[in-house]
Amino acid sequence: MRLKTLAFALAACCAAALPARAEMENAFGNTVISHYPDGAWVKHWFDRDGSYRAAFSDGRRLTARWVIEGERVCLNGIRPRMLLSRFCTALVEANVGQTWPGRDPLGRRVRNELVAGR
Image (cartoon, rainbow, N blue to C red):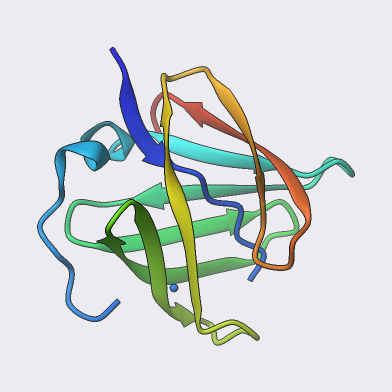
């Protein structure tokens, strides 16, 4: 089954949450992992209510709110506050187990992967 999921690689954020669109359905309950060339990673979790959480390989955690704007997904309200207050990226079609290239908000290359479960 094809799905659209989020191509996020956050190193570092929406007003009220909008109703989830069909593109997001399969992202819920699964995990997007952004892998860095040096072995570091970030795990990203998106919930239907517009909430977002991330966990970094170095132990840091953050939260934000997500919203779809056209063909992009944007994060706002990053906590704890970081250099960037907003980050948007394109939606990418992927199946569980697939990977795709991306860049984090600082322009660093990452390999994103959609994995089943949380």
